[in-house]
Length: 189
Picture 1: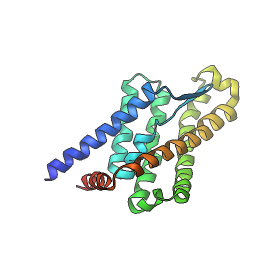
Picture 2: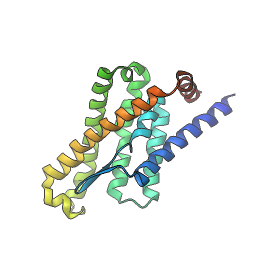
Picture 3: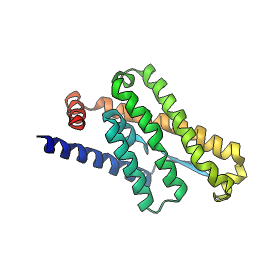
Protein backbone atom coordinates (compact mmCIF):
# COMPACT_ATOMS: atom_id res chain seq x y z
CA UNK A 1 0.00 0.00 0.00
CA UNK A 2 2.85 2.42 0.78
CA UNK A 3 4.38 2.10 -2.69
CA UNK A 4 0.98 2.84 -4.23
CA UNK A 5 0.62 5.96 -2.09
CA UNK A 6 4.19 7.00 -2.82
CA UNK A 7 3.55 6.62 -6.54
CA UNK A 8 0.46 8.84 -6.20
CA UNK A 9 2.47 11.42 -4.27
CA UNK A 10 5.16 11.46 -6.96
CA UNK A 11 2.58 11.78 -9.74
CA UNK A 12 0.76 14.65 -8.01
CA UNK A 13 4.06 16.45 -7.42
CA UNK A 14 5.20 15.86 -11.01
CA UNK A 15 1.90 17.13 -12.43
CA UNK A 16 2.10 20.30 -10.33
CA UNK A 17 5.71 20.72 -11.41
CA UNK A 18 4.73 20.40 -15.08
CA UNK A 19 1.94 22.94 -14.62
CA UNK A 20 4.40 25.28 -12.89
CA UNK A 21 6.71 25.09 -15.91
CA UNK A 22 4.07 25.21 -18.66
CA UNK A 23 2.08 28.22 -17.42
CA UNK A 24 4.94 30.76 -17.62
CA UNK A 25 6.09 29.37 -20.96
CA UNK A 26 2.76 29.40 -22.79
CA UNK A 27 0.31 31.64 -20.93
CA UNK A 28 -1.20 34.39 -23.05
CA UNK A 29 -2.01 36.41 -19.91
CA UNK A 30 1.14 38.46 -19.32
CA UNK A 31 1.34 41.94 -17.91
CA UNK A 32 4.38 43.75 -19.21
CA UNK A 33 5.68 46.71 -17.25
CA UNK A 34 9.04 47.28 -18.88
CA UNK A 35 11.48 45.85 -18.05
CA UNK A 36 9.49 43.30 -16.03
CA UNK A 37 6.65 41.03 -17.01
CA UNK A 38 4.22 39.15 -14.82
CA UNK A 39 2.45 35.98 -15.96
CA UNK A 40 -0.87 35.48 -14.24
CA UNK A 41 -1.11 32.08 -12.46
CA UNK A 42 2.60 31.29 -12.78
CA UNK A 43 2.84 30.53 -9.04
CA UNK A 44 -0.47 28.69 -8.66
CA UNK A 45 1.07 25.19 -8.83
CA UNK A 46 3.60 26.10 -6.14
CA UNK A 47 0.88 27.47 -3.86
CA UNK A 48 -1.32 24.41 -4.34
CA UNK A 49 1.72 22.27 -3.50
CA UNK A 50 2.12 24.35 -0.31
CA UNK A 51 -1.45 23.45 0.66
CA UNK A 52 -0.62 19.74 0.29
CA UNK A 53 2.66 19.35 2.19
CA UNK A 54 6.12 20.88 2.68
CA UNK A 55 7.71 18.00 0.74
CA UNK A 56 5.42 18.48 -2.23
CA UNK A 57 5.98 22.25 -2.14
CA UNK A 58 9.77 21.92 -2.14
CA UNK A 59 9.71 19.26 -4.88
CA UNK A 60 7.54 21.44 -7.12
CA UNK A 61 9.65 24.54 -6.45
CA UNK A 62 12.92 22.79 -7.25
CA UNK A 63 11.34 21.04 -10.23
CA UNK A 64 10.09 24.28 -11.74
CA UNK A 65 13.50 25.86 -11.19
CA UNK A 66 15.16 22.99 -13.06
CA UNK A 67 12.54 23.39 -15.79
CA UNK A 68 13.39 27.06 -16.21
CA UNK A 69 17.10 26.23 -16.30
CA UNK A 70 16.64 23.51 -18.91
CA UNK A 71 14.25 25.76 -20.84
CA UNK A 72 17.07 28.21 -21.49
CA UNK A 73 15.67 31.06 -19.41
CA UNK A 74 18.17 33.77 -18.36
CA UNK A 75 20.07 32.86 -15.18
CA UNK A 76 18.45 35.74 -13.27
CA UNK A 77 15.02 34.19 -13.97
CA UNK A 78 16.25 30.74 -12.91
CA UNK A 79 17.67 32.16 -9.67
CA UNK A 80 14.45 34.07 -9.00
CA UNK A 81 12.59 30.76 -9.35
CA UNK A 82 15.08 29.11 -7.00
CA UNK A 83 14.51 31.87 -4.43
CA UNK A 84 10.95 30.58 -4.12
CA UNK A 85 12.36 27.85 -1.87
CA UNK A 86 12.45 30.43 0.93
CA UNK A 87 8.82 31.59 0.90
CA UNK A 88 7.56 28.13 -0.02
CA UNK A 89 9.37 26.53 2.92
CA UNK A 90 8.09 29.14 5.36
CA UNK A 91 4.56 28.97 3.99
CA UNK A 92 4.30 25.19 3.69
CA UNK A 93 5.64 24.50 7.18
CA UNK A 94 3.33 27.15 8.62
CA UNK A 95 0.29 25.76 6.78
CA UNK A 96 1.14 22.23 7.87
CA UNK A 97 -0.13 23.11 11.33
CA UNK A 98 -2.56 25.86 10.32
CA UNK A 99 -4.66 24.58 7.38
CA UNK A 100 -7.51 26.85 8.51
CA UNK A 101 -5.48 29.92 7.41
CA UNK A 102 -6.66 29.41 3.83
CA UNK A 103 -10.32 28.88 4.68
CA UNK A 104 -11.40 32.42 5.51
CA UNK A 105 -10.83 35.46 3.34
CA UNK A 106 -9.36 37.54 6.18
CA UNK A 107 -6.79 34.99 7.37
CA UNK A 108 -5.99 34.07 3.77
CA UNK A 109 -5.27 37.72 2.93
CA UNK A 110 -3.01 38.16 5.94
CA UNK A 111 -1.10 34.97 5.13
CA UNK A 112 -0.91 35.88 1.44
CA UNK A 113 0.44 39.35 2.28
CA UNK A 114 3.18 37.95 4.50
CA UNK A 115 4.19 35.34 1.92
CA UNK A 116 4.04 37.97 -0.84
CA UNK A 117 6.38 40.28 1.07
CA UNK A 118 8.87 37.46 1.71
CA UNK A 119 8.57 36.44 -1.96
CA UNK A 120 9.26 40.00 -3.14
CA UNK A 121 12.23 40.49 -0.79
CA UNK A 122 13.82 37.22 -1.95
CA UNK A 123 13.50 38.18 -5.60
CA UNK A 124 14.96 41.64 -4.95
CA UNK A 125 17.94 40.01 -3.22
CA UNK A 126 18.47 37.81 -6.28
CA UNK A 127 18.23 40.68 -8.78
CA UNK A 128 20.44 43.15 -6.85
CA UNK A 129 23.82 41.57 -7.77
CA UNK A 130 22.79 41.45 -11.43
CA UNK A 131 21.66 45.07 -11.31
CA UNK A 132 24.89 46.29 -9.74
CA UNK A 133 26.88 43.98 -11.97
CA UNK A 134 25.29 45.81 -14.92
CA UNK A 135 24.14 42.57 -16.50
CA UNK A 136 20.42 43.34 -16.84
CA UNK A 137 18.58 44.88 -19.75
CA UNK A 138 18.69 48.65 -20.28
CA UNK A 139 15.10 48.96 -19.05
CA UNK A 140 16.22 48.25 -15.50
CA UNK A 141 18.79 51.04 -15.58
CA UNK A 142 16.39 53.48 -17.26
CA UNK A 143 13.95 53.09 -14.35
CA UNK A 144 16.71 53.16 -11.75
CA UNK A 145 17.22 50.90 -8.76
CA UNK A 146 14.15 52.03 -6.81
CA UNK A 147 11.82 51.93 -9.81
CA UNK A 148 13.00 48.72 -11.41
CA UNK A 149 14.36 46.54 -8.62
CA UNK A 150 12.44 47.69 -5.54
CA UNK A 151 9.27 48.76 -7.39
CA UNK A 152 8.82 46.30 -10.21
CA UNK A 153 10.65 43.29 -8.84
CA UNK A 154 9.93 43.73 -5.13
CA UNK A 155 6.48 45.31 -4.93
CA UNK A 156 5.37 43.90 -8.28
CA UNK A 157 6.31 40.38 -7.18
CA UNK A 158 4.48 40.79 -3.87
CA UNK A 159 1.28 41.87 -5.66
CA UNK A 160 1.68 39.16 -8.30
CA UNK A 161 2.23 36.61 -5.54
CA UNK A 162 -0.96 37.66 -3.77
CA UNK A 163 -3.02 37.42 -6.97
CA UNK A 164 -1.67 33.96 -7.74
CA UNK A 165 -2.24 32.90 -4.13
CA UNK A 166 -5.88 34.00 -4.44
CA UNK A 167 -6.27 31.92 -7.61
CA UNK A 168 -4.66 28.92 -5.91
CA UNK A 169 -6.96 29.21 -2.88
CA UNK A 170 -9.97 29.46 -5.19
CA UNK A 171 -8.92 26.34 -7.13
CA UNK A 172 -8.11 24.46 -3.91
CA UNK A 173 -11.46 25.38 -2.37
CA UNK A 174 -13.51 24.25 -5.38
CA UNK A 175 -11.91 20.81 -5.35
CA UNK A 176 -14.20 18.22 -3.78
CA UNK A 177 -13.37 17.65 -0.09
CA UNK A 178 -12.79 13.93 -0.59
CA UNK A 179 -10.29 14.63 -3.37
CA UNK A 180 -8.36 17.07 -1.14
CA UNK A 181 -8.35 14.53 1.71
CA UNK A 182 -6.99 11.87 -0.65
CA UNK A 183 -4.28 14.18 -1.95
CA UNK A 184 -3.15 15.26 1.51
CA UNK A 185 -3.38 11.66 2.83
CA UNK A 186 -1.27 10.48 -0.11
CA UNK A 187 1.44 12.99 0.75
CA UNK A 188 1.67 11.81 4.37
CA UNK A 189 2.37 8.20 3.41
